[in-house]
Length: 304
Image (tube, rainbow, N blue to C red; front, side, top):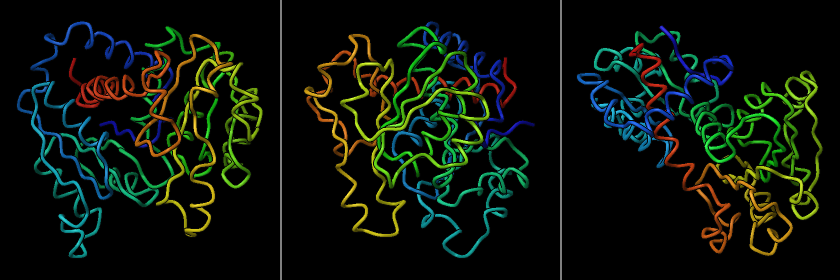
């Protein structure tokens, strides 16, 4: 039985295979419409979510399966003091696979140790979000037709942004990847990622606080919001939340085939005037998330 807790749980070959299956689902949806007939996905979301939860639910439904679960901790027995381990063992009696989001880092890993069915980490605190990373990889592939020879700009909250951490880890496995890390001093990428992933794998990177000075060289610009829920100090959040705002003016020097991505939700970091720019891929990115999760569900349930 396989779980997906960290993007590192998947080899580069497995990631490429998931992308291949997702592309086939996009091309031939009818072929997959009953693949999960009589299978049940449980969505256990101890933390708010719109896109991730609905994406998992839509993915399972389009595979012909059913969905059970809850969308907040307050509507589960956790509110009565039940442990994560007991919740997981209970829900495993009703379902074939579980997608779980939790505010505490490591909670899905603990769940996977006790679970009798596959666990998918749908986000654990500021740590990991592997299915968002798979979504990002499929988006990059669909938009650029490759996952190598790219210069990727990551902008905003690089300290707490779990999507950034997972994407850096995944893209570092591909050839000739360069990163431009754009953030204020307080939100720089963690040292463990710089040393343990970028420098360990001899990945070229630069750190800067300026979008304007960097945008011309980028193939991908991955914007992130400054996350209020990750800050202990409200004053720090208010000071940094509008540090970067991508607008038409900043895009003047960008490549014609730049791909602009965002894991969403967006607050102010991308002006709505950018939405109609053909380079804006973030809503296409949402759609791709459903297809890659369909491919992942099939893989973990060992359905051909």
